[in-house]
Length: 111
Image 1 (cartoon, rainbow, N blue to C red):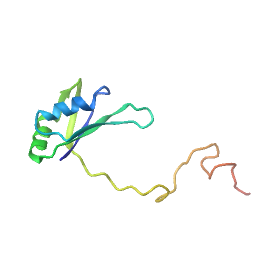
Image 2: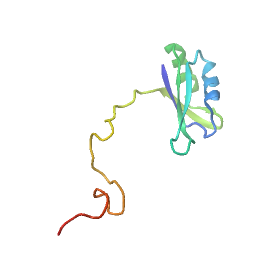
Image 3: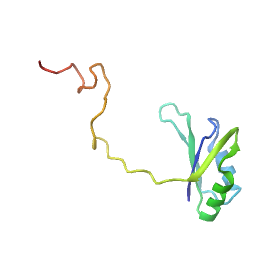
Image 4: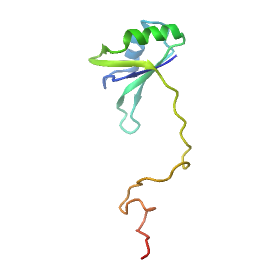
């Protein structure tokens, strides 16, 4: 069972998350998700437990409880949504830049 844990303290480490869930059964992995650019925790993570009954017991016991100074939320993780490959899909939207995102370079409108 893959478990989603949110509202984690910025200082929470994967090891302490693992230890918290290990009280309820075998834990395959516990990972805190970090920001790609800053390396800082994003305040959520995932715990994988192979036994669904133990995973559900951990969810029931730990949801809305205090952990390292924050009230955590614990639930079954939803599958990741499919996202189009890079360069595919909708290409609209603001692309930034000094010309308002009109393809880069100079504003190419002809009057």
